[in-house]
Structures are given as structure tokens and as C-alpha cells.
Image (tube, rainbow, N blue to C red; front, side, top):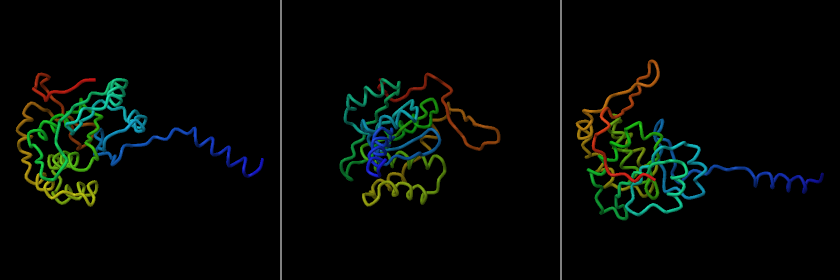
Length: 205
């Protein structure tokens, strides 16, 4: 077999390999929580491998029908919190972030993917507020935000994260219990005790 034939055979084999392509800016936040930019059809096989239960979508635009069909096929619930994100002058709504955080810390929704358009600003603000809830120091919260936002880091986002009153969330958790996973683990997970707690409107697909 000549070298040319060997290379052609290898090329055909590579063409048939299943390549899992993550969405832009994809990363694991912690066990059961992921973040990314907007998923496209090429990313569906990768998302399928995550065994997602829920997606937290932070944009006001309707979800594309092709994406909805994928969610239906995988029994993934879509929870939409419409936050405008075109310019730096658009304020992040505190109440919307608070409601999204309640969904995010409920382990019944895990594994969960958070995403906006690029996975930078709106997603970064939500993750930054989660980190404050986890008692991260502010410098580490900012470093993580800037790692994803890059040169498009927004001072207004950093100010929002810094000013966000995490005690509002703690006060909402009177009906939430801590669950410890694994013997000797100090990792705290949260679930709702009362199934009738009012939650933000969701779209189940």
C-alpha cells in the first residue's frame, strides 16, 4: 500500500469520527452546572453527552425551533429569563437575576446549562452572583468574569456583581434545606423542601 493510499484511507476514517463540539465559551461552573454561549445544531451531540435536565436562557429572543426540537427529543426543560444585553447602558434587572439564582441552586434542575448569546456578560453576571453566594472573594469573582468576557469586559457588570445583595437570596431560602453529598464532604447542595414554592414562569418543551 502506497503512502498516498494510506493517507487517503486515514482521511476517510477521520471523516467518520464523531467529533463532539461544545458551544462557544463552554465551561463547567461546578458539578452539575455548566455555562456557554448560544448552542447551535453542531453542538447538539455534545449537549446530549451532558445529560442535561434544564437550560437557563438569559436572552429575550424566542428560542429557535430547531433548538426546541432538540430539547423536546432530550426531555430538557427550558427556563427563559429575558435580559436585554445589547449595550452597556442596559441595566441588569436584579429581580430577574435573583429568580434565575433560585432555579440555579435547585438541584432538581441539574445538570443545568446557563447561556446567553456569547456566554460573556449576562451569563457572567449570573455566575458572578452565584459565586458571591458561595462566599468567593470579590477578586476571584471578577477574575472569572473577565476570563470569559476578555477585552469586552464591562465595568457596569462588575459593579452590578459587587452591589448585588446576596442576602436577598439567603432570605428567600427559609424553605430550602442543605443536602450533603458523600461521606465527609463539605460541599453543600440545595433543594426545595416545599414543592409549592412560587417559581418564575417556565416553558417546558
